Amino acid sequence: MRRALGLLLTTSAAVGAVVLLRRRARSAPLRADLYFADGSMLSLDERAPELDGLMRAARAALGATR
Image 1: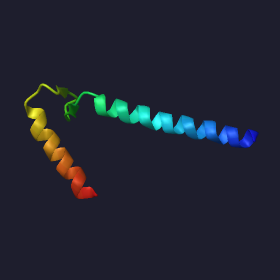
Image 2: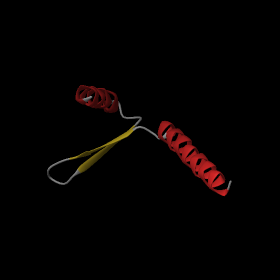
Image 3: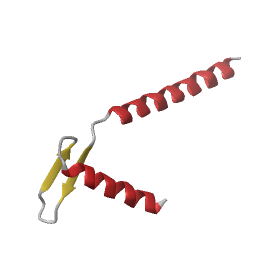
């Protein structure tokens, strides 16, 4: 009985963690950080018009690897 209760609590905690992480991932703002060879960095947030094209290219590249 005690073992079953422990298993139930562990499983419930794992499911809750997955639900929280998925919600956080969906609500996270879209952003891309670009690092250059000279050490500089450019950060594009969801308001940058260039981000749409960059994200399309990134999704296509990820899709090609699957």
